[in-house]
Image (cartoon, rainbow, N blue to C red; front, side, top):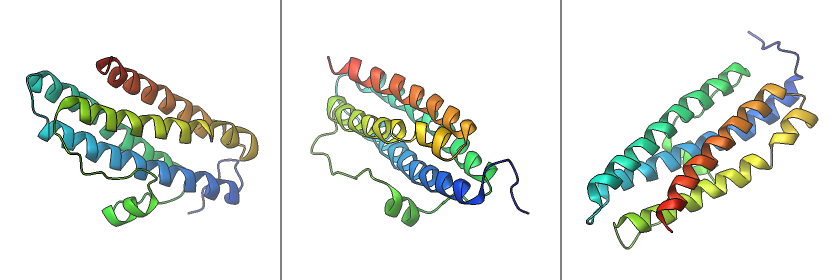
Length: 157
């Protein structure tokens, strides 16, 4: 059934395209955070193990909400690793160390990359595509990533 929410179909498609890319980024970041949770080593293991667990929990909720936002707009959310890797602008690096600082630097860089990506679309959603709902949603998502990045950055000082 056609989605009729007061936004032109071509605008919905353009918004969904950005959201699909964002979903891929979120999934890759979730996976990288889960890796940090599983593999972190060092004297601060227990605290960082719990810290990374809290962060991947937040990312899991983001992924679900984002996929549901895509569906709300009448489009389908990608759900395979192949699709995510083709769509993401994040990269997978083989880290030389499993210490918490190495993981935190990598994850912070990814959060900041996502922040830049999101910030670049907020106004387009509202003004160009006439989708204030997605603009608002992305603003909230941006704030969540800002806080998560702050938490990582604070550990690196």
